[in-house]
Each structure stands twice: as C-alpha cells, then as structure tokens.
Image 1: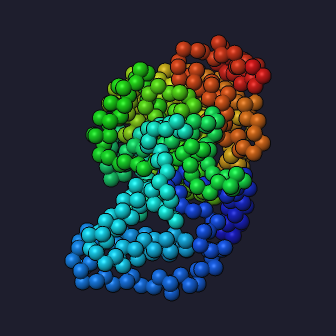
Image 2 (image 1 turned 135 degrees about the vertical axis):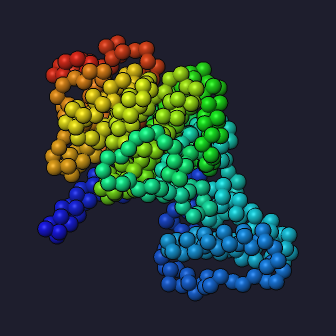
Image 3 (image 1 turned 120 degrees about the vertical axis):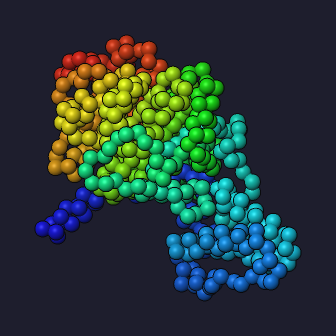
Amino acid sequence: MVSRHLFHRALLTSLLLLLFGCPKPTPVAAPEAESTSLLYADPAEALPGIEAMLGPRPELGDEQLGSTPLTEALDLIWKEIERAREAEDVERAICLFDDWQAVTQNGELTKAEEAAASVVDRLETGQWSCPPEVESPTPYRTSDAYNTIRVFYGTDRVTTDTVLPSERYGNAPRCPATEGDVAIDFTWSEACLEVGSLEVSIPSRHEPGEIETPSIWRLEFKFDPAKHIVVGPLSPVEPDPWMADLRAEIEATDGRQVFVYIHGYYNSFHNAAARTAQIANDLNFDGAATMYTWASAGTPQGYWRDEKQVRAAVPHLAAFLHRVASESGAERVHVIGHSMGNRALAPVLAGLAEEGISLDEVILAAPDIDARVFADEVVPAMTGAARRYTLYTNDSDRALIASRFIHRNRPRAGQTGAIEAAIPGFDTIDASRADTNLLSLGHAYFANKASILTDITEIIRGATPGAERSWLTPWPNLPGSAWIYDVKQ
C-alpha cells in the first residue's frame, strides 16, 4: 500500500515537473554570477580542492582582535563563506574569501575596518557581486531607463540567518498550521507575521504582462534594471510604523485606494514581489500596491507541501487584510487572489463578511478550489465581503488540469464549465480565448496578457459593468452575469 502511494506521488511529481519545468530564475536585488563561471570552465572542477584552498578560518592578529567592529564584520563575512561552501557554490565562496583576505591582510587597522564595513554593507544592501562590478543603477533610483514601484508586504514566511536581503524570507511558515479548522479572530501575531516594504524596478521598455528576466539566449547573465524587473532591497518594520507609512502612501495618491495581491502555488517571496509590481505598473494603478506572501515552497514538486502551508497563512492573512481594510485610510480596498492563494483568501472573506467589513473589488483568478465546495460552501459564506466579485476561468489551464488529476478528478473552480450556474453577486469571465501563448501554462493569464489586464483595469475603475465592455460577450450556456472574453474584439 505504501509503495503504491509512493508510486502515485512520484508519478504526479513527474507530471508537475513536466508541466512547469525547472524553477525559473528569481528576480533579486544583486544577482550573483550565473553558471557560466569567470574563474573556471566548470566550477564543479574546483569542488574537490575547495576545502583545502579555504581550510579552517584563519586566526586574526593581536591588533585586529582588539577591534570589535572588525571582528563582528569578519564573523558575518565568514558565515557567508560557510553558507557558500555548504551550497557547493565554489565561485561565491572564493570571491568571499578574496574579500576576507583583502581585509585581514591589510596592515592598517583603520583601513581594514573600512574594507570590512564595505563588504558587509554590500552584502546587507544586496549590492555584493562576484566578481565585484563597476557601479551600476540600483532599482530604487529614478532613471529614464526604468521606473520604480513601491510594494508593501506582509508575510508569514520564516526569516533566514543570511545577511543578504534577497534571501531574508524562506519557504516555510513561521507558525505551522494545526490540525482541524483554522480559527479566524483577526489577532495580529508579531511572532508569525512580519511586514515591510521594498521597491521594484520596471524597465521603460517593459511589455505589459511580462516579467522580464535575464535570458541566456540573449547572452544576459545578470539582472539589469534597464532590461529586467529587479526586486530591490527590502525594509522590514514594526506593524504600527508600517501602517502609518502605508496610510501616507495612499493619502499621497488621487485614487486613495490599495490592492492586495495573494499569490498561488510555486512562488518565492521575490516572484510574488515582481508580480505585484508588474500588476501595479500595468494597471497604471493610482494607489498603494500591497501583497501577502505565504510560505509557498517555490518549486513545482512542492504542491503537496504548499497545500499544507497555505492553511498556515489563513489567520495571519486575516489579521493583515482586516488591518489594511480598517486602518489604511483607503477609500477602496481591492483584492486579487490567484490559484491556491484563494484557499487562504476564501475563509478570510467569510470572516470579514461576519465582521461587516466590505471590500471593493475582489478578483478570484484561476482559483484552485474544489468547484462543488466553492459553489455550495465558499460563495455563500463570503457574500457581503465585497462590492463585486469577479471569477476568471480558463478551459486550458494546465496547472488546474494537473490539480484536478491530483484531487481524484474533482473539477477546480478556476476551470471553465466547472461552475454549472451563474453565481449571484459574481461576474464570471471565461478567459480561455485570451491565452494564446503555447509556452504558457495558461495559469497566470490574468497578469500575463495585456487584454485581461485591460479588463481588470476596467474592473478596478469600477465604472464599467460587463455588459458595457466591448470585448466581453454573453456566455450562452451560463445565463446571468457570465461572460466570454472575445479575443477578436
């Protein structure tokens, strides 16, 4: 029985890997060199000699031992060396060791302290690279080559022990879910929930719907703000100052609004940040861009793990969204839930409805929720939590096809035709015709296609009902407020 279970699990994992492929590069503030090494034809060739080359940590001289700032800085640098060695990242370990030697072999204490402080500063701000680069644009500066989007965030991801901001948040929840139903009482737990903000650069030549990353086919091995979406250094803060900052950001806009994006399965922190900024940019959103990022494993084979970890996010997403809705000063609060992220969002919306808190536009894109449970239990429970709901479906969404297979052929709410009747209070839109990219999984179509982004723009504006959007035609087999996106329009 166990072997059969393992066989099925291996088969499904292979299916997910086939559909999703290998993980895509994660946008980071200061990317390191790609697999093409500048030191070796093949970095793996150096692995047998790496221990001998670096050896144990060198001892400091008497004069250097008397400097506490220098000792603390070298401790941080050596910790990063050890992390690189454990990850068998030869090039990074050697570059860091070169920095170490440049500091420790400096005969003048003051200069050694300055050199060490420079290395630590570059590590902490995400500007360290291997080998060191000539100064280049950073995403938080203004430039004709790119603009920046500020993203506010909340997360229940664990924090790591690295000094690199690009790796601050891991892929596990701070507070794992307990068995049974998850209680929603909107209590903010600082032990489980961290907030902050960051800035993401968007190239001036950005194509709507795209997440531009380096491509080896274009001989691009590093992130360039003029060409790629780059996630900049982040700033975690305490909840009260964070809310004051969010309120000020909203007050400074004419729209006086905020949207909260909740990502789906197979997302890292930085994937989610890049997507949030892309959506805000492409919608030309006049308000504050916010995301809640739960502890997705960030890998295609992590589906089962994600199913458990999205449950852990429910009480913390509830506290986060409740506070944004009630304290941010926004006149309109919108929410965009994608894929498995809707599993955390649905019970939170039900809780908000019970509290009498109503959001403005709530968009459920490709929800990975059992269709029958969605129609019979989820929808009735969250009635009243939003002025309008929009459900996007797709009949060629391969991620949801895989999910349906995993869940014993039970249709998912995000699949076209899975919902057999129009849902009161919902605009249901079949977006199957919008996804024409054969290399796409058809799963992030809501953010990947300029046409659907246009539709979402009209939704956020709140003034144009479905019947007046020329690209939508009535859904003949689903009477009521149901539409088909017509790619010809």
